Every structure is written in C-alpha cells, then in structure tokens.
Image (cartoon, rainbow, N blue to C red; front, top):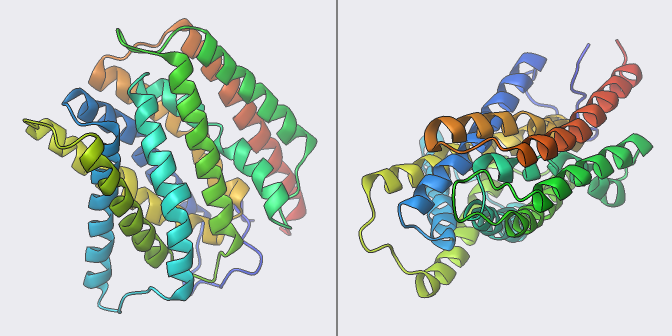
Length: 318
C-alpha cells in the first residue's frame, strides 16, 4: 500500500516511484531547506545584504541547473509552458520568498524563521482548496491553521528572537509570513500543471529570471560588500546549491508524484534541523517564546497532516 498517493492525471513515470524514494527525497529537501537559513545568517554576519544574498543564491542555483542540463546531453527541456511557468514562479517562488526570508533572518534566528515557515503546509492546503479541484478543505485543516497562527502570534509577541542582540521578532514574523504566502501560492501553481512540464526546465527558467531581477535590484540598493570573506562566499555557495537548486528540483519532482498536501510534509521536519543547526553553528538561543510558539505551530501542522494521511490511507486501495 502506498503512503503517498500518486497525483491524478500526472504523467506515469517510467520508473516506479516507491515510498522509500519519496521519503528519501523528503529528507533531502528538509535538510537542504532546514540548513539553508543558517548559511544565510552566516552570510548576513559576513557583510552580505539580504537582496545580495537572494540574488547570489538564486544565480548559483541557476548555473547549477544548466550545468546539470548540459551534462545530461538531452537538450534543454524548455518550451512554452516552462517559459510561462518559470516567469510566474520567478516572482512567487524566487523574488518574493527569497528576499522576505532573508529580511526575516536579519531580524531573528534560523529556528524562529523556520518555525514561521512551517505554516506552509497549512496555508498551501487552504490555497489549494480554492485553486484546485481535488484538494478539498477539511475542518481539521482550518483548526490546525488557527492553532498554527496562534503559535506564530506567540513568536511575534513573545519578544524572543533567538539571537543575542539586534533581534526584532514582530518584523521577522511579518516578513516570514509574506514568504509563507508566496511559497504556498507557488506550490499550488506548480501542482496545477503537474505532469505537463519539465521540472528541471521550470526550475532553470525561474531561477534565471528571478536572479536577474534580484541582481538588478541588489546592485543599486546594496552594492557588493567591501571585503567579503571566504566564509561568506562558502555560505552563499551552500545556500545556492543545496539550499536552493537541489531542494527546488527535488520539490518539483515530489509534487509531480504526490498531492500538494503530501509534498508539504517537509514543513514539519525542517524546523528541527534549523533549530539544531542554528544552535550548533551560530550559538542561537532556544528561548521560551520560541519553544511555546514553535510547539503550537508544529502541533497545528503535524496533527493536521497525520489526520490527512490517515484519511488518504482509508481511501487508497490496498
């Protein structure tokens, strides 16, 4: 019996996608997205601005995509639909969430921001209800969302940013929520056309366009850091390759084979990675407000997804 049901109407892959493969992809995505905020905070500490980091990471990821395409020697999988989707996603999946996430990370710890981002599954489920025909909204999803929003309220109003000085929890929370809304819209938009596009092609197009826009904005606004360190460049490279390219490519692979609801299961794995990595690498603090707010957010997400998975098992033939 499959834990992750296949997407209705999606193209049937030549190779069977097993539950083990799906879980492997989920874990890689979770690690990449969970550790990327730590790399971004390192880059911020080394003097790179939020716009510059967003531009650099998306540009690095775009180069990685096209190197991969060139290595496959199967031509560039970019057609009309990839161009159209890539143009839209360059805004809602790259420009807006990358920049607002970096602004949030400039005002709070990686764990704080990632806990706010954990709302993506619930917000995506609500968005999918209105945008897709096969993603009905359930009462327990609404209850989970309200519980999660209560957790975010604690994070915003609790006064704990997770960093020793210079933190601004309310501002970080607002920027984090904007990123959540944008990423949720991107997930639903990509799911709407699942099976009809090349995930690699769409990823490349959106990163190229997104990085170009971000660079045009970053150069006059922030300029380049006067004396960037090797640590800063390495952190940008890490965030661009593993935190952006690998995770985006695998995420679009994931949503071609499972529903949007199941693809967002990564949302309640990556906060633990971000919190632990932030404490170990940056000496970030696990403060009471973050613990209480984080527990509420994760309860809302995890309980909702567990109920949804149980219902899906009942509907799926054995």
